[in-house]
Amino acid sequence: MVIHYPDGREQLTEADRNTTRLALTQTITEGWPAYIQSLQAD
Image (cartoon, rainbow, N blue to C red; front, top):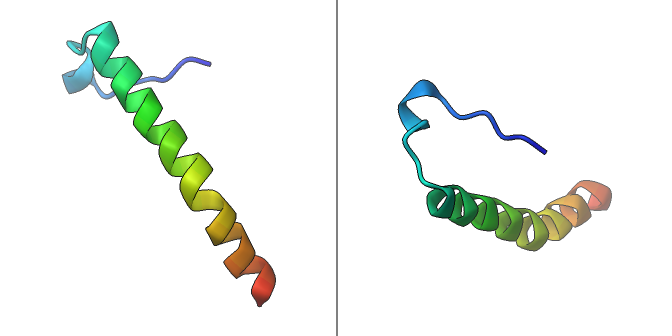
């Protein structure tokens, strides 16, 4: 998977990108189950 960043973020290092990817992954894995449950509860 390739993530395209806005022009201003092109200077990020690989470590910065990995940190961002980890944060996104953590948000998805922790936040989505509760969100999906709330949708199904309706």
